[in-house]
Length: 223
Image: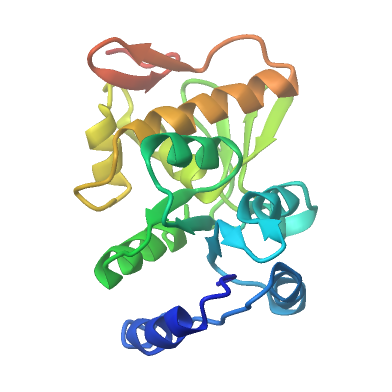
């Protein structure tokens, strides 16, 4: 966790340990990034308001890095967490966003959802032509490929496993085992981000269909 709130870390550390989640806190971005370089992490909790910098700058630095670090699941923490803030955060690379103050049970649920990454099997090609590489956290469409964050991979996996069925935003949230009060609009934002990533890679088509009033399905699946 990169957060300069020492008291928060002192409260969270023993509470999370009871659920077999080990929290290591860094009070500054520099220290946090150094710790990641030295030992890595399964999930990062990132405060959006840090001394001397913006939390999103740290997130973007990680997303632009090379190697496995760029795919690290990042959960943003902020007292500013209206819908606009959450959407902007997701568009810029966050996997999730939690408003402070938060219930410890919600944090645990979000962390576990982020660590429930796709399995470590070989890359599998769906009937739609999308290849989801669950080991490297990469999605491919023909010659085009994109790197995935944890939530992006989970949503693609959910759509892939639907096989012929349209999934509503709430159904996708359920498959991701998100908290019941999670905002369905977050699904729209992540799917928008997936589409934008493939467009930037040079892919000009669309691989996720929006069924108005119903939800989403992968191209090639029948409703």
